[in-house]
Length: 273
Image (cartoon, rainbow, N blue to C red):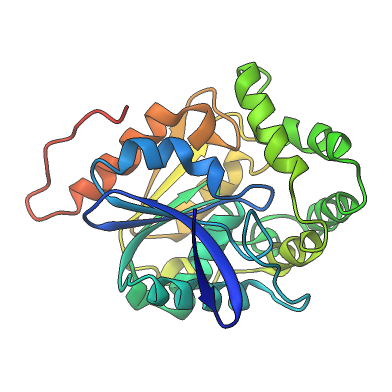
């Protein structure tokens, strides 16, 4: 992992490959390690960069009053600090909402969007009662033993068919959440409502959704697709919320071919191991 200081706050990230920059934004109960299959496969084609958002992984915690605009401002400053002026931005779950907020505030940084297991924020995509219930369940993770937190979250993130190794990997990441940052991260997405951004998106957009996603049901993906005029929606069969981890080959091929299709004249697709 590499570290850089952004406004006095340590931000950790992983980076591999060369070429066009592809920035990966993880979910709320994850960190950059959830993208290791993309770093391994896509770094043969792109400059792939996966950060630990403030409050996650090896990065410092954010202030308690941060919401999505503050996370996006930090993201933009971090990109400048590591020399990225424009990038393809791929967000998963919480990271997809952050990607939308970055586009809202700094559209000039974004060449294209990949929105995986996405929402326009909980307030923007879910009924109020569901948002309140989900926020309460996230706040309970603050005091829960790691094993209990993992047991509560796992069924919402991966399917029962996920291999044991993946189950252990996701559970391990959940067990290492920053308790002090969970409320801030949860409230940021719970309060986010980015519906007004969707019809204003002008960059090419790929929406990737797992067929069996329990955390963001397919209806949410259909809603995003209907509102974003530049968007293409692809559903990965039999995959859950963490589709990039549960179906990495399919996910990687989709992302690689999507970005290559944006080049003048397109480009010959390759396999994404």
